[in-house]
Length: 141
Image 1 (cartoon, rainbow, N blue to C red):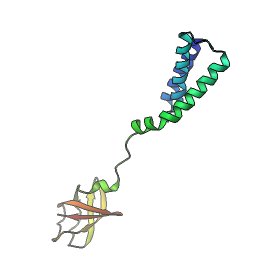
Image 2 (cartoon, helix red, strand yellow; image 1 turned 30 degrees about the horizontal axis):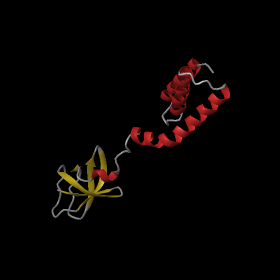
Image 3 (cartoon, one colour; image 1 turned 180 degrees about the vertical axis):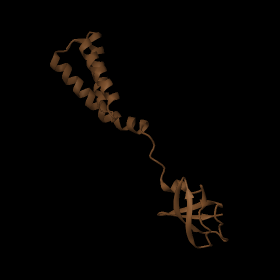
Image 4 (tube, rainbow, N blue to C red; image 1 turned 135 degrees about the horizontal axis):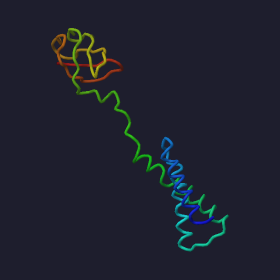
């Protein structure tokens, strides 16, 4: 294939990678096609079947070696887990006696809340999340 055919193919694959919802598959094929085009410009004259073979091999090898590190680097971090609620401030929706379970608001949602402190928590009082046990917050004032 002519060098500019490889360049057009490579750019098309890179654009297709941008249009798809990530995964870094087409990226390596696009880079491989661009490299074959550059080799053609530099005077490496291979028959067409060898160019396609090198293109495929180069794409698959780079895919195997570099895809996981790229995914790891560019993926969004996982959403915070429920355990990240520890230390945050909640607001008591009821008066909660020591050891009793009531309702508390945290991040705009109502939660079951257990008062693990020594005294009662009045309604509307801000309290701290000490632990998350399933769907129940252990709170104290």
